[in-house]
Image (cartoon, rainbow, N blue to C red; front, side, top):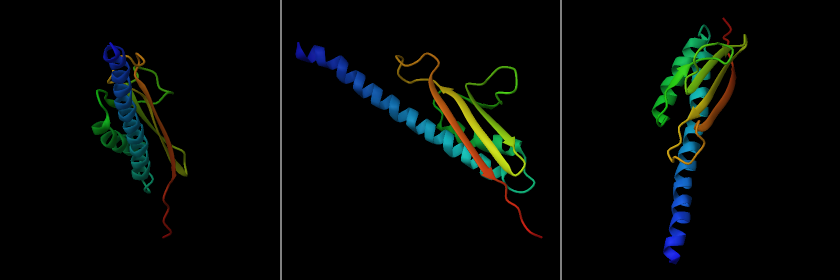
Length: 128
């Protein structure tokens, strides 16, 4: 009887721990991908499109069950589950990652687990 009462609680703790670990890894991957994209685009003569491409290429292998796409909150249209937005600020490059990744355990929020990252890196300048 004690095992029957304790088993669901133990299972909930184990599955919750796994979900938390996966979400932490995906959040870290979003921050790392945004940083890589901003670094790539901070090179003199680069564009925000380069930042979006690099960020999506770095982020995609780390996502479980979601795809990343280029989309900015100021744009209309359909928002991808995980979005990447790069903005040229003049002297700096800004890369934002947002959206949500689906939960592995079905008792989480229906829209998934939130992902967000915000990175701003100053552009490189060279004296000639």
